[in-house]
Image (cartoon, rainbow, N blue to C red):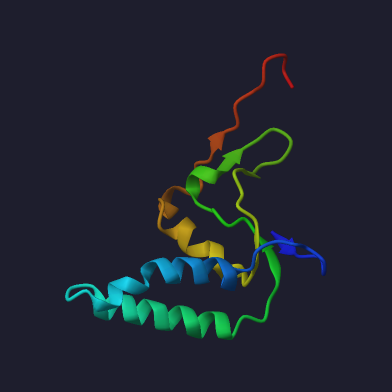
Length: 114
């Protein structure tokens, strides 16, 4: 979305994913998913350790969150703003129908034509 101001007050990718990692940590002991959970948690540690960029991110970016509009060709809705590496938003987009990205839904018109 763009560079975050120095005094932004938004949660960082490291902070948000730390909460998610904490919720996932108990899966390390699982006989089936333990190895995958451990690998995912290790990858998260490695990725946030190298985080150098601080851009404002959508935080919930996926196909259903991008609409076609009249004022601009694209409108991103329903953000859960945070700051960090710009690649953070990409997996959500790729995992939800990236092949149809070129067919945005139209933003509904408000009564009265506004």
